[in-house]
Image: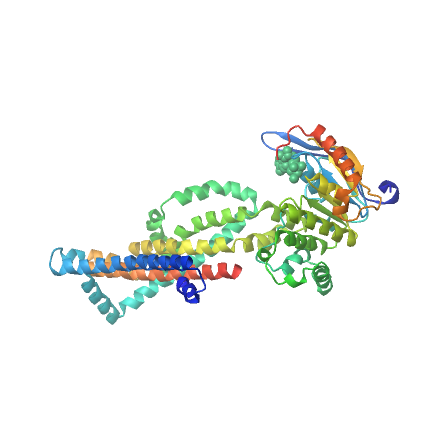
Length: 262
Length: 274
Ligand SMILES: Nc1ncnc2c1ncn2[C@@H]1O[C@H](COP(=O)(O)OP(=O)(O)O)[C@@H](O)[C@H]1O
Ligand SMILES: [Mg+2]
């Protein structure tokens, strides 16, 4: 399936640039970037570390303003963008339930209806029994799921995920990333994920965008399509196409990445 | 004690029981010496004073201190002076911590204010606050307000510095999370920064018990006609060492009780938080 033909654009990035200024230097993090993001797609971004992936997400979220170029949101506003981080950022003094409602509380849209919608999400994704627990009573994977639900509770149009699984151990990472992808697909959300992990990108995504070294541009975009032959991550990993995608992405990154240290 | 409870269960291997018994013995040994040292100290003190090996007129003695305490109790001075000092100290550490939180919040609010004020904080923190005593007397007279101000001088600056460090060490990611929800700076302060720093604020409160006592006693030395500090200074002036020693003893007890109270509140909070 060709995503470009089938889907409508929800967010358009045109000639986007961003420079960081410090007293010592000026850093061009992103330069003349163009990218269309499609409705309900799962887009992953991989690239050398320090190339500007987090910067890109901050720009898209409207948390920092660009040095040049444009971000066009189609019929929604920056307040409808949800953000998820490497750490779950749950507040240890709040119960799971209260944590899930944080976004609603801050946006002052917490009412009976929005609260019960959020609690329904907890229930739907097997977290109801923990709703009165404190975060430190939950495992890392579950906490990340709660963080996702906290973001989903504000009913965002787009979810931005900045390496949300990289603080988890390997086993949990595979399990939780699959669960989280399924939740996002289930809730029919558009997602942009930054990751270090090529296999994760292949298994999760409809498209994988490769960022170049700083100043970052989009070097290449791969459409990931298992043709409906592989559903679960396990099946995908064993599929012949997996290795094909892996090799392609790997060699793109290798060309790019002369100073990858982390 | 926990070890005894565990031993009562008796579901452990011999090796573990031996270990627990050893720990128990060790625990009692420590307690024995802790208490023994203080008893020995008082006994020797009394002994040397009785047999005139030291001059009780300048060293006092436990027995004479005891008599002094009884006579202070009779005249009502004991409790009145304890009341003054305790009251001033409590007002001092509560107000000092509260002002510390408020000032830290104001400074946190604006990076500009922080940069402007930082060198002042450092210099004021280095200044020994006793030096300001004469100014306080001239401006505020010799009442309780002068003493509370002295106390605040001692505790506020260090509180601000401590609390500000706590405020600034809240993870950048959590702040970004709040911003991604469109939080205002005030919301970030009230919903994230302050709740995340309750334990910092409680430990500041604990430090401020000590700080306030320094302030109160310094203040009473300088200006007051009441309080335990006054008893000590007065005792020195009229060469009644019994009174001086009694004052110090009362102060020790009062300070310990206040410290224990605050530290138990802190423990309770930490336990509730798990
Ligand atoms: N606030 C900032 N001020 C100055 N330079 C920054 C700032 N944030 C990031 N940078 C620099 O911009 C580049 C891109 O950073 P980032 O987007 O975090 O990279 P990535 O997420 O891809 O690892 C890095 O070289 C980083 O040092
Ligand atoms: Mg990053």
